Structure formats: structure tokens, C-alpha cells
Amino acid sequence: MYDIVIIGAGITGTMLARELSRYDLKLALIDKENDIADGATMANSAIVHTGYDPEPGTMKARMNPEGCRLYEQLCKELGCKYTVVGALVAACGADEERHLDILAARADDRGIPYKMLDGKAAHEAEPNLSDEVTKALDFYTTAVIYPWEVAIACAEVAVTNGAELYLNSPCTAIERTDGGYIVRTPERALETRLVVNAAGVYAENIARMVADNVRFRITPRRGEYYVLDNAVQPVKHIVFPVPSKEKGKGVLAVPTVYGNTLIGPSSDVVEDLADNGTSTEGLDYVTKNIRRLVKNVPLNRSIRTFAGLRPSADVHDFVIEEQPGAEGFVNACCIESPGLASAPAIARYIINELISKRLTLKEKQGAVLTRERPAVMEELSPEERSELIKKEPSYGRIICRCEQISEGEIVACIRRTCGARTVKGVKKRVRPGMGRCQGGFCEPRVVEILARELNCAPTEIVLDSAKSNILESENR
Ligand SMILES: Cc1cc2nc3c(=O)[nH]c(=O)nc-3n(C[C@H](O)[C@H](O)[C@H](O)COP(=O)(O)OP(=O)(O)OC[C@H]3O[C@@H](n4cnc5c(N)ncnc54)[C@H](O)[C@@H]3O)c2cc1C
Image (tube, rainbow, N blue to C red):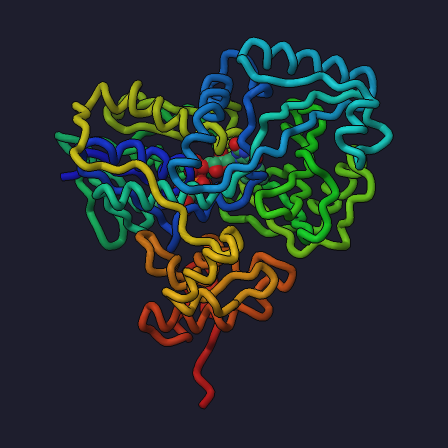
């Protein structure tokens, strides 16, 4: 019998699993996909928002500033990237400038640092701002992360502390029992006292497995992006438009932790919960809107486009509560932006306000909540590199020339706890294929290494989801 089964290994589920793994609990984390962080956590703007934007009185306003305050230390503990780039909310004209005052007042209330910049100061800070920008709020502590890196690190810590991770395990039904629930997947029946529903855009479907009175309706909103080559860096800061109720945070330019710039997202309601393809219309919308704020955006240097689905709902707020009438079934649902930034606070809230009312939480002897950063050749000094190559020569063989990733790094990411099993899994963890050629040169080598490490035929290696095999058959 489990104490808790968490459904969904995105940032919400993994962050919670890590926090819970400090306690003496029997814990399972399940996901329908073949890797951690394949939902919204894989496709977003990657910003640790400081928390000036959410409407007062909402769960978002409660979780976001606290989550943000916890992030830097958390990333240190997990050996993850946390890069402060600062964020400018840029106003064009008097109407939008008035909105900056509202945001500044919220920031004051929430203890969030900022500077108000007049037009001249804003253009000095960010020379590529368009001439339409007349004033800007500078949230200079805003950081970007690699969201899936954090989720994978959290899962790794949880599993090291004894949590069980089941991938390729869609929850297909939930039954109530006298002592709790049975969470069914095609291969397992997980009997548990409590369930946490952190299933992203699918969370409404999961909640309906235990109740008819679900108080939210999720309708995903798709956000599409361009990714620019890291040789061109049109902005130093994240550049936001003034947010609005209709368009949310709008179309941004975001410098990422590895120097690529994201341009996006769009915001379109979609019916299909899996519809994360890009479209000409969505990308045209992005192009049109970014030009209002930033001039000279080199979209001809785009190396990729992608889209993510926001688990947006009619309640316009996070729903983090026990499902009425279903004792011990906790919803962590409708976690749209700023869900990434809020995740550390959401995990603590679920434990302190919901789980601790149902279970006695006793610290587990020997639980370790930290993780050492895996060796990244690019981050080492020449002496450290030579030392590593002497010990393990595969660190001297470069597989991904664009991003300078060695065979040693790829092998290590496959062998780790919660290691990569797919080409995308390797790309997520150590980045071969993230560069200009998008895997054109290194992908066959990655397939080879995966097959060797996993002791299977190259034809069995998948790109991404189940059945996305790359090679049909061997040609001898
Ligand atoms: C375009 C876009 C931009 C964003 N930008 C930001 C930003 O800059 N900053 C920020 O703070 N937030 C941002 N967000 C929001 C943020 O990405 C999400 O709030 C966060 O990733 C949600 O995490 P999650 O774990 O709740 O959901 P997800 O990451 O979607 O994880 C849910 C998991 O549940 C699994 N699952 C679903 N159904 C089942 C089932 N039946 N059985 C088992 N598993 C199941 C899925 O496979 C998935 O892995 C953005 C979102 C989008 C889409």
C-alpha cells in the first residue's frame, strides 16, 4: 500500500515528489509518457517570474512570489542552471504606462524589487527596444532556468530517496477503497492512501475519475515559439509587453540559459489535449507582436519552432485543494503560467496544508535532498577537462559539434538514476541536437550510443514518444 501516488511527472509532480521524499512514506510517481517533463514543463518560456503580475487574492499571487524566492537556492541544491537576466515590462504610450503603475504597486505589496525606467533609460538598458517603447519596469532579479533539468533533478532526488517512478504508465482509472484509492495503469494497480493529481492539461480527466463535481474546465491554450541560433542575441533582458486579461503575458523575447533567444508565445485555444504542433498563423502572430517591442529581431536565424499547451481553465487560477467529496484526493490543477515559478511553493503548500492533515509526516533517516551537477565539459577549466579525459577518454570525443557535447556526457546521462532512454531524453539532459544543425549530424551517433548503453538494437531506439522509431531495419 502506497501512502501517496502522484499522477504526472511535470514540474508540479516532481517538485512535490522531491519534497515528500524527505519523509518516511511509500511514494510513487507515475507518468503516461516515456520520460519526465514531457508536458507543459517541456515547452514554455522558462522564466522564474518574480510574481508582480497575478491578480491580488488569487492562488497564483500567493504561490508565485514565494516560489520565486525559493528557486535560486533550490537550483543550487539540485545542481541546475539559474541565470539572472532581468525582465523589462515595456509600455508603449500613456495607457500602457498607467498599467506599469499598477504592476509596480503589486510589486511593492509583494516585496519584489524593481526600477521604473523612463524611455531614455529603458533604451539605454536594452538598445534593441523599438522606438514605440516609452517607459519600462525593470524586474532586475528575474531569472531563467532549464525547466526540464529541474524536473529531472527533482525526480532523481526522489527516486534516490526511495520513491518509485513508473513511466509509460497512463492512469486509466481510479477506484475508491475503504482506505483510499486504487490508481490503475495498464500494467499496475497502485493501492494508496492519498492521490495527487498533477496531470497538466489532462488533470480534469483524472479528477473526473473520482468525482462528478469537478469545479474547473480545462481548455488548453497553445503557445508557439521561434528559437534563435545562439550566435545572434537580439536582447539582453527578457522583454515583456504590458500584460492584459485577454492575452496574458503576451509575446516576449527571452534569452535562455544557453544563449538562444525564444520569441513567443502565441495564445490560441485548442480542443485537442495533444495538439502541440506549430502553425503559420501562430508564428505570424508572434512575428507581428514582437516587432512592436523589439526591433531587428533576426527571425531568419530561427533554428527551430515549437509549441506548448497551457492547462488554462475557466477558473483563471491554480486549483490546489482536496477534491470536494473525495477525501485524500488532491488536485494540483490548472497550473498554467506562472506554474513553473510557483512550483516550489505549490509543493510546500500541498504538504503543509493538505497532506499533513491526512498523514503523519516523519523525517526519513538519511534522505538527501541535494544532487551534484553532472560534469559539463563546457563549464570545466582546461585543466579539469584534461583530468576528466584522462580518467574517462570518452569525454574527449565530441559527438555534438554545435554544442560541443562529448560522448562521456551522453553516456553519463543514460547511466544516471532516471537516465535518458530516448534521443529526446538525451537532448533534454545534455543538449546534443539543441544547436544549429538540430541533430542533423549527431543524432545517428546518439542512437548508436543509446543502443549500446541500453543493450538493444538501434532500430528499437525512439526519437521521442513510444513508437517514434527512427530506423526501420538494418541494411547489411
Ligand atoms: C507556452 C507556455 C509558456 C509558459 N511560460 C512559463 C514561464 O515562463 N514561467 C512559468 O512560471 N510558467 C510558464 N508556463 C507554465 C508552466 O509551464 C506550467 O505551469 C508547468 O509546466 C505545469 O507543470 P505541471 O507539472 O503541472 O504540468 P505538466 O508539465 O504538463 O505535467 C503533467 C504531466 O502529467 C502527465 N499525465 C497526463 N495525463 C496522465 C495520465 N493519465 N497518467 C499519467 N500521467 C499523465 C503528462 O504526461 C505530464 O508529464 C508556461 C506554459 C506554457 C504552455
